[in-house]
Length: 326
Image 1 (cartoon, helix red, strand yellow):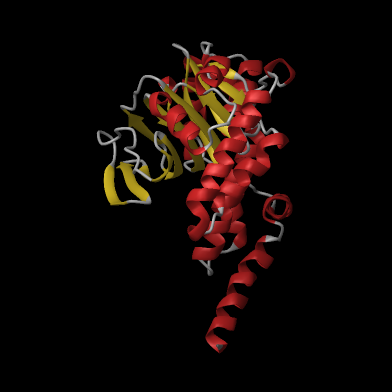
Image 2: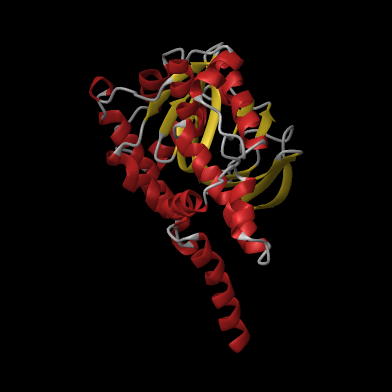
């Protein structure tokens, strides 16, 4: 098989390795790092595995005559949706567009994203697929027109019909990788060709960037002072955004309501403190996160972490003792 030439991304990444079967690239900036691993499938068809641990990155990606299918396995990603909007993918979501929404800034609200992109260079992909499968009935240009002839990307939110297609792509043995990739790509195209869009309306909301920017500022305020418990009304007035817009947009950007998000955020900070500083009093950790009542703190911690703070701390001590005995 002739090796694919991946879309030119050299303006934003550093190449780590390139062999016939894969191409590994790294993108890094002051907010973190991401690794992209590209596998050729057919000529003009490739799968890119994306694993990012960063807040945001800039992309100069732009290519005409292309079809991109993105799937999110973990985390969240924000990309543009039209001139003034933002689109979010969360775990289980699939997005289809012509690649135009991958150009510019990408944000990772949870500082973490793991997913994949199946890319089709329409000029060469159709021909290479038909050479491999002469009777394959799907027309890539028709798929592109069906899903990309709109102002915003098409998003299919947590569709169980496609979960098995993508889930099986995240753990493929190396010796069958190329043939298996081909089978799964053709299966996905058949599904998209048969899917009735009207029966699968997109429920993933889009938000104006001005709203998203306010919600990001609210997130920064709350996470920089986790000991402070802000009310919805207080945040609404301070950032000049209605309570309804604030609630909806925050959940859309960060994946959960404000209070639930901050509870989880605080308990993860507590878990880190319990693990790293064994001599620090649990009551002091609770106070540092705004909990004056130790009982309420313990109940909140257990609801998120599954154990009381003391049980959580002791579990690390027991693990270390087991290792020492070995």
